[in-house]
Image (cartoon, rainbow, N blue to C red; front, side):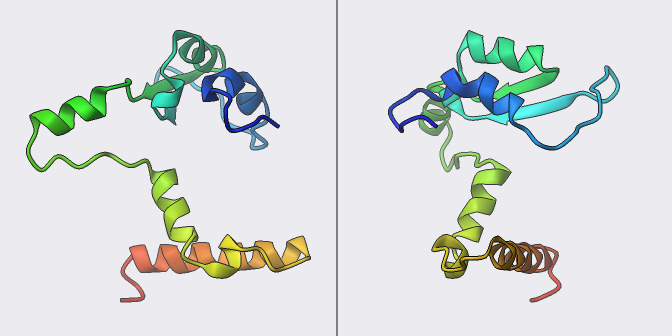
Length: 125
């Protein structure tokens, strides 16, 4: 575990090695992308992502600021994960973990994910 003062790109290898989900092997026809924010916009990070077989999608530093000044009404692109975390934070019992048992917390997490999915699909109005 690292402190908040450490650059993100210095932990890329450890992060990629710790992914617990088996993934299919990437191919020319079916490449696998890795979306990362501008904190990873370094050649070392790009090389590591490529070494693990991913295609890097990294917003360059200053690119978003430049787009804001050039385009009227430009809105910053937010990654799906960031947006979803924001939605998850609206559920207080998930944001502040009161449950002592991991099973109970996981059940609430699944319930919140199901609710968000139904709401985004337009099934809950």
